[in-house]
Image 1 (cartoon, rainbow, N blue to C red):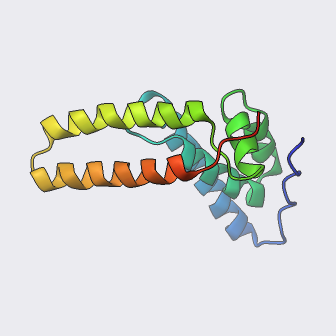
Image 2: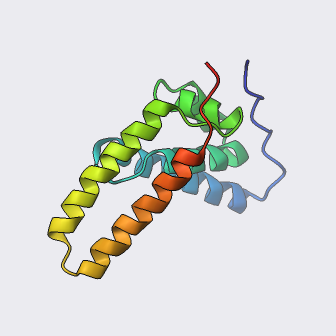
Length: 134
């Protein structure tokens, strides 16, 4: 099943499109950093980049959809807001490692608790997403 093509960018002002494009690029860069830095989310930033690119740059949006790593994630999200089991486990392991690091390096216990609480909320939301069909 093919995902629906990206909506054509609405008639937005040049400034609005430029801001959306800049936001898409920023989110893409943050998502790329998240691929290699433990604790930095990737999925959320790539989803936001795709959203902004769909509204500002059909070329960037098409590149994201056809990307080897990000394409399947975006297709799953577009087809029912699903997240693969592999992505869920990858996020869980990465956040668990980060929680341990934060526990030992935070200057204040409440900061560690806040960071770990945020990660726990994200994981609860992530695991509540359905799996894609086989």
